[in-house]
Figure (cartoon, rainbow, N blue to C red):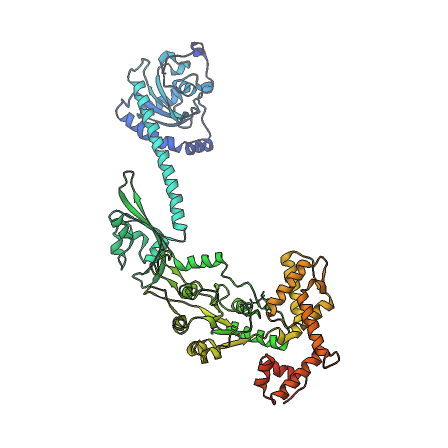
Length: 626
Ligand SMILES: Nc1ncnc2c1ncn2[C@@H]1O[C@H](COP(=O)(O)OP(=O)(O)OP(=O)(O)O)[C@@H](O)[C@H]1O
């Protein structure tokens, strides 16, 4: 719809007292800023229109949606005249209450192109002029109005058409402008994402030309981000980039391992994912390559699978001289990164010590990776320890897998039950012990690893070496710092302290209120021989706490078997002796055995099933000599 001269004639006689209304400077500047897109795009059309109309008689005015003048262009004379007659100056307020009904006001009010010529104007001061105005609409909202004004009372048959076409042109221009701004904003976000991801990001076109590379990618490939764009990737790096294979085959890949050395001589072990990019017709137009350093992947894996040491020296309980000696030795081991061997029966706390050593060492922030050599089938130990290469065996994960040594890089590996490691694996272990180098099963690449080794066993490794079951060279390399953890039998004076510690620990875990133990129950625990050491004691206490409804564990909560065994012992002792204290019995037994072995400490300690150290300590305690 178009308005042509539809004016309320009764307004013609209105007197407009205040036609010089102009916006204040501050308000005008604000309005200019908020309409900057409209002004920027309209100006192009205003100047264009001006170039083929008679500048002498015409002015073109742009207003915002409230009829405030944003721009006015035209020949100098006519511009000055329109300022005087029509108030057409930048910042002027042309609303109806100030200037009467005009083509601009009507175009805003009714959202349609409007023309008002000569006497059709309500304002007598406008009646020498003709105005042709068209609204500029974006998504059904009026942004402003463009108006062609002629110093002529008679209608101009081309003017309205010209102004409508200009308004349409401005609308299209603004729409494109908004689209571009949106794309620019999106690109900004995308760039921020690509630049801030921890991975290297590279994009090439179907000719292998770099179209984008992020800062991290440039660092890994050893190339300058800005200078590389527009150049063939093959010319920028000292190796054949495997991303080019994707252009040949059209097939991408996920998480493929790759080792590269850039021009700066820096080696990177990467995990790469390459994705072909196709246009809407399915034509390959480029490849996106994302690569990350595998050390960060391993760190993440370790964090997720819990390759962490949770125990510290504060968790090790026991104040017997044997235990204190062990703890001191272990603290010394924590100060060094030498190979460490922990010996002791099952359940004596070998892993507990290994974790405490790691947590007090300089490697405490690195991974702690434990592997039990006795618990893994012989055929799998090698790949578990050293990893395997892609295609090493059927069923293996495509792209290969790192072994525990690689996963422990920068930290500690705990080789539990090392005495059970098959001889063929021991040969490979020797290489790691000597050079800290790992070769995956089925691979040629050698990886350097920075790993501290703590091994443990309940076997006599010396005897195993003599029998040919364990390699001497490994034994000597592991036997640098050796910690022999005494069994609970050898340090029965620790039983009360360990018991109280375990009651607190287990009650907390099971959310029970049990916190004490009766003297009778504690005495029964003290006389037990604890074949399974602290672990067995822990199991008995866990069972007792589960059974116990009160705060105190009593005899009835302990397994019947313990009471039976104890009764049996007392019966046996009654046969040859009145009831003696436990210490008296121990002293007498040691004395008898020493006599039997004619003072040979080694023989006596073997017969008593305690270490020589322990025997010496006990002899000191009971003032026995040979
Ligand atoms: N001195 C100690 N103080 C506190 N808790 C201990 C102590 N010794 C062992 N434990 C606890 O006993 C349990 C067994 O310990 P750990 O697993 O370290 O023994 P291990 O010698 O490595 O056993 P295995 O040879 O069977 O692997 C763990 O729950 C551990 O926390």
